[in-house]
Structure formats: C-alpha cells, structure tokens
Image (cartoon, rainbow, N blue to C red):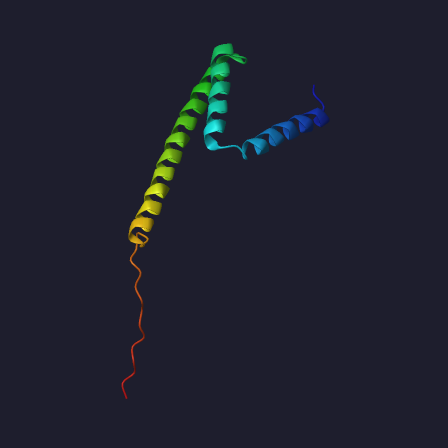
Length: 104
C-alpha cells in the first residue's frame, strides 16, 4: 500500500507537468495529447478501459481543436473588419438614452 507521502509527491509531479503545459501553444499540447492517446491505445497498459479512455480523449482534443480554429478565424475576421471599416461589430446596436425635458 503506497504511503500518503508518495501519493502527494505523484500529485505534485502531475500538477507541475500540467502547469508547464499551460505555457505551451495549444497545437503542441494537442499533438502531445494525441501521442499519449496512441500509446494508450496500442500498449493497453490497464486493460479494459485504457483504449476507451484513449478514444474519448482523442474525441475531446478534436472538438477543442475545431473550436480553437473557429475562434481564431472569428477573431481574425473581427480584426480585419475593424481595420477596413474602423467600426466594430457587435450583436447589439448602441443607443443613447436622452432624458426628457420637463416643460414649464
């Protein structure tokens, strides 16, 4: 039975690794994740669930990658429309509310 000290040490190593990944570009992290998934699928280190976990993670990375691509394209379009027209686009038009004058 592992001691609580080694469990805490393992959690700190994992937390440090994940923190280091947060500073890398998304594309690189996605590729590293897919390589790990391929390893899990081929090696099958913990038999009934490792292949299922690898497939689920691959699907999640694919969805996140697609969302990331759409987001960057949207931002690029917004910047281009701002630079060409000088007007920002928003979902709601801005209106100025004026106070009614009291008539004497």
